[in-house]
Length: 130
Image (cartoon, rainbow, N blue to C red):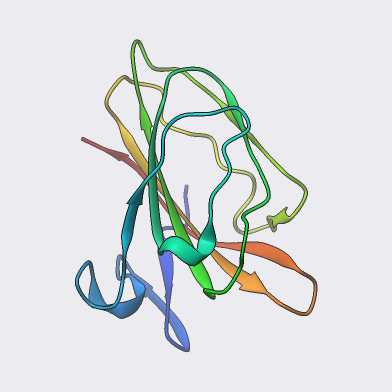
């Protein structure tokens, strides 16, 4: 069973996003597919790309924001996997995510920047949106 609790402010709540949703302090940024996929964290909070092949999620540039959401959409026939640079950290309750595989499915992955370790800690997930 997946943990679908999302970090919000000082705690966790099921299905809520920081800032109260798009328009509540979040900026969406479309990014073209690349391998590796590099995010400029200073550009916004929600980063969307359509997977057209497997890729590596690279080190986010300019970690001036404290949290990001990566929205991955399965393009083409779907089934594309990602691997994660070592700056992304996972834990027992939120292991490395297994993405949806069906074409058109959207997965949301939320990370908080940990300035003490210079890592992005995985704190929330939601899978299989259509």
